[in-house]
Length: 358
Image (cartoon, rainbow, N blue to C red):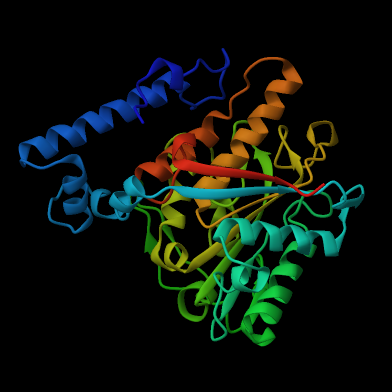
């Protein structure tokens, strides 16, 4: 998909937060980057895809980011991502309280549709094996009205035990507080674009063989978003060092964090809680910007589920003000994540299936 086409680069709002690029500037930057890749590939007598593969193998020294950034880019070019948005009219009981059996039914249905399995048992077996050690990373920030519902991670743990045979003691449900011995921090990882060092919980580096990412859908600091990619700020020792939403900070830091091998290789499932999302005014709760969407966004690609969540929020934002109200920094983040091969952000790379369980 060419980012230089006018149709894909609409004008954003007249005034943006300090440090934010306009959508046209984002597209122009991507076009320059793509042109540079093609020129360098031509210099080596290679196709763009072969050149990216060589960068991934470390055969061409381009920049300090190159060998990290393009890992998986060849696979991302070829593969599409499937995302299921499952909705149930009876999932909300009252205010922020939800119906546990309905949540489980929504997850079962989403996994069947996502995996193409014959039944829910076979669907859950695509997420885990009976010998797995599973880390379920949820999001408790914003409680009691804007966290990922505990009923979601409870259902995940219960179904992994019942349908897959994972021993309950080998399923650890955590956010920022992690029990010993899993709470120790790893040796430092260095993110390539700005040299930021961070440490992951050893739960993810040393113990878990599978990760289920359970996040909540909400706007964050104006034009950013909290969803699957941002959820792992609860998994590091220095989340404050990743902020803010200037183009060189969170929009790059979060994709690079999620591209670290322990997170990228072990993530089996991403669930974004969109039961009562927040389309503006975040990250703190603001009732005037929250609405009952009654949905879960489910997939295996953290970029794709986040991108679908952004489009859901932007549709609500447009409905609320009667004109486009883009989430500029959030778009930067998923576009960069796609560029480094972490997953798919463009709508034409995502197969979205909407399932209404009414």
